[in-house]
Image (cartoon, rainbow, N blue to C red; front, side):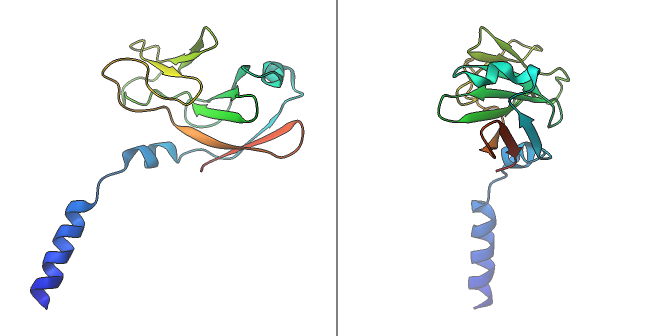
Length: 136
C-alpha cells in the first residue's frame, strides 16, 4: 500500500504544471472607473479605449460593445521590460521594449514567437457609468 501511495504521489507531482500566468496576472487591487470622468470619455463608444491606474504598470480598458475589457500594461513575455505597453492604431497593444504586438480584443499575441497573452482582469458594470476592475 505504501508503494502505491508513493507511486501515486510521484505521478501526481509530475502531472502538476507551474501556472506562472495565473500568479503573474493575479496582482491587481480593485479599481473603480467612472465613465463620466474626462479621461474615460473614449470608453463610452464601442471600440474606444483608455489608460487607467491599476496593476504594476497600469491598465488598458477597452469597450468591446456589449462588455468592457481590462488588460495589464505589463509586457507578458518579458521580465526585463520596465516600460508600460501602449495602444497603437486603436487595435493593438505594443510592448515598447521589443515591439511585440497583442490584440486589444482578447490580449492574444500577434507577433510570431510570442506565446504569452496579456493579463486580463474582470470588469463588472456596477451602474450605467461605473465599472469595477478586479482579479478573476
